[in-house]
Length: 314
Image (cartoon, rainbow, N blue to C red; front, top):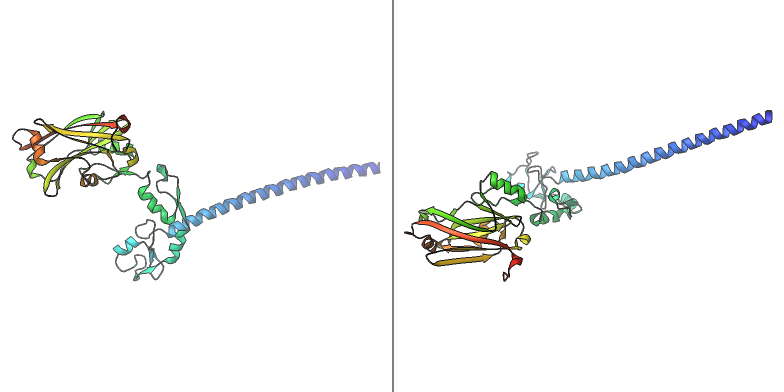
């Protein structure tokens, strides 16, 4: 019995040892896996913290925007952007030490190694740019917000097209019309006393897009004139898919214009100064108005169409 009993005990001890070994191996693998995940997570957190720290260093302490060369610093190392350096007094806004003209070359060098997403990432731009190339890209990024096209005042509101359409309707109370043809009348008493004026903007909805009809009085050299033109609520490339025509007339005469609507990326002043629209001399506009020519009563008719519908000659 003793030999048998000894064998049984040996086998039992062996199985127990085997189980203990398996458990030990499992525990070791679990600890190793957990440590690996923890190390990976730590490295990721370190990279994020490093980037956040560098971005914080590149933030101007005065205006809180990102700094671009030249980056200045006071003798104590407090940095500020070139715009703020030109605006603030001679003392550092942080320590009140005299600023001087010390460049922070080390921080400028660090910035060169960074790559950043476009600021308009939430609006659809997913490109990554070198730190110093990001600003240049954003000035012409096709996803950048549009500026309100209202011409009656310098409105600083920006946003996407749908937001601006609601803004124009609710805040500026502009006229909104559906259709690709229009017949609009502009009236002004004592027109000879006004050399510069802007009439209420009119928005036309057609082809699933929006177009802004402008009518303004201004001085072309020494001559008082009116200009009518159309702007497209979208970018320049899209605007080239459309054409429009304008005409005014009266007393058996007619003046016509045909062109491509300018994008609202171009301000109404830029379009007006480039004379890209239907220009009517004031005396002619009053002739078209009829009567004693003392009151402006000008009818502007127009049409918008897709450029594929007819040969525009452009």
